[in-house]
Length: 145
Image (tube, rainbow, N blue to C red):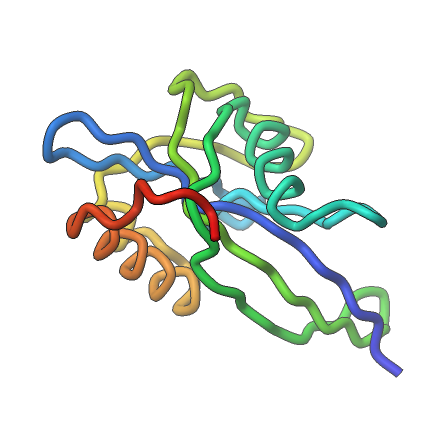
């Protein structure tokens, strides 16, 4: 029987005028993605998303809404793992990145177009497109529902 893991993370942005920047992290293989991590027992996924963003990047954020979830299966130490990751749209409250180098290889702000180009996983690219659509339509600022 597979092991089930629940994680949470965020598509984190800051905006100056019309310019939207997206926070991304790189793994040890140089693949760019979004900060995320395991939801602790009894922890709400939304709280875990904010915690993981801050732990991995040093960025504090304000939670806006659930963007969606991704699910995938992989092997770890010979065991099958099913993973569900809840991704939230998060507005950055701070902008100075302090990567947690024990967890991520790098963390950077990218323009929205560069973030789309660098996104290593199709599911993340879809989430980013959804987030950018909400931001450009002015629908992102409503509180988490």
